[in-house]
Length: 131
Image (cartoon, rainbow, N blue to C red; front, side, top):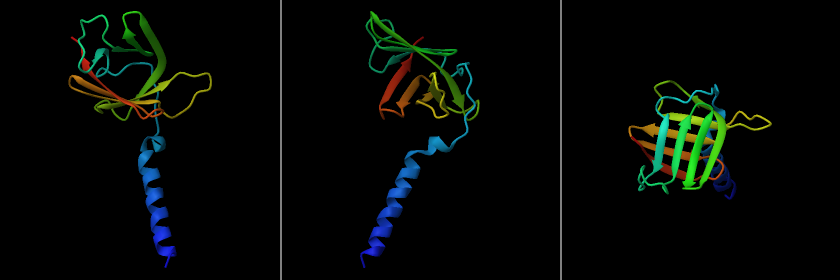
């Protein structure tokens, strides 16, 4: 009857909700030190490191800086966490007055490419490593 399809639909919705938030169930160890795979300057894909108007992300201990344009800079204080030293994915949590356990960003670095995903907005940004 109607009951079986409704139960199946609810089970599907529940599985989607669980799958979309796997990062929330993880235990994090937050540190100030930037992992070696992230350290340095990264430029938004398709832009040039040497162009003073290129958008940059500069990861360092205690947070990262970004440049949107020649005169527009910002700084995000926060901490890093990774599952293991060999893991390509690192989580970043912004420093707030009231601390939270969950990360704000997932950052995956592989070779000369970096992907930064915002859990808040769902936006993904891709970067290339600068020399």
